[in-house]
Amino acid sequence: MKSSKLAILGGSPIRPRPFTQWPVFGKADERCLLRALRSGKWGKLNGAEVAEFERRFAAMHDCRHGIGVVNGTVSLRLGLMAAGLESGDEVIVPPYTFYSTASAVIEANGVPVFADIDLNTFNLDPAAVEAAITPRTRAIIPVHFAGQPVDMTALMKLAKKRNLTVIEDAAHAHGASFKNRPAGSLGHLGSFSFQSSKNLTSGEGGIITTNDDDLAERCRSLHNCGRIPTGAWYEHHLLAGNYRLGEFQGAVLNSQLDRLETQTKIRDRNGQYLASRIKQLPGIHPQLRPASCTRHSYHLFMLRVNGKEFGASRATVIKALQAEGIPCSGGYAISLHRQPMFLNKAFGPYLSAIRGKLDYRKTHCPNSDLICREQCIWIEQSTFLGPRADMEDIADAFEKVYENRSELAGKANG
Image 1: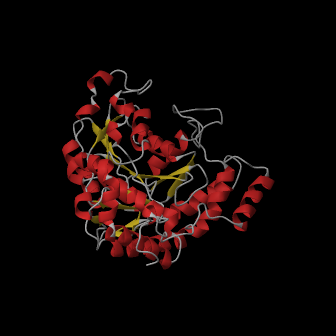
Image 2 (image 1 turned 90 degrees about the horizontal axis):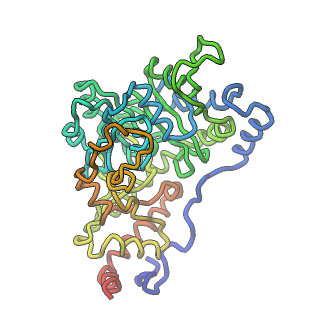
């Protein structure tokens, strides 16, 4: 270890150089973009890039259909609409996820119902989902948070029993697998994001995946102004819009997709190694990985720090790690159901008829609240694209912070 004195207290940092920068790109990406540019076919309607990407991405995720759209929020909303969601229908979602998982439900005129997560996996708890089902429940949106698939066996069994549609929010889970089956092929529909931070990115973008021919046909119509293959061009069968992914994004994604398999293997290997190192420390609890998770995409490396067991608070640990050169954060500060939009029911034109009956202040999700308030630490995916030595640096930094926890706690109290 380079220095026993914490960097935050004046010592030398463990990691003086940056980790892998994101996005990763090169001449191949440039050639793909120029190919799309010079084709003069910049839209999906007459270009070849998006169609090629849809085919390749769907095949990689063991799906017959892929429908490229402008972003991951839209892919969720169109999935709900394709599934037949009606005004006031309830959709069960986790409280520990990005805003869009629930906002997409509202924009489909549905009601998000929050079911708590498992404290150790950070994923939707099937028992909490079952307890949240009512006669108005129509769908479940499990989030493969950080890139670790949810217990889809339990959820699909429950969905079949209650006749519910399952839409996987796989925004973190490109290349992840559950019992050797790819994320995005496990539910009735899958939704992926290609926003800037994602493991596969084109800056913005998304895709819907499915093996259901009827759902795929409805999604294609919904993302293309309500058109159908047998109709005239200016013939519109559904309330829909233009949500098509553009050819420039398709070109970048085709190039980036060539790297995804190798990058996913590297992330998974590094994430498992780091977890094996730091879980030895008192109070450090990396995301529990069930045997059913046959590949983790590690969009995030997540852990809980129990301040009492570790000897220093989450906030103090984060500051100390950052001073050692380790990029990390506390993630979400509050659970989704505690966001002002839900507390104030600021739903715009949606759910106006039943808004008075909704009160998210009564929602109780103690596991999500605990990790938001005082326990969770995130490390982002690009940090895991480097060599094993990078993981050694991160683990060494955690150990250094733990060994100096008394001095650190004294500084925090002083």
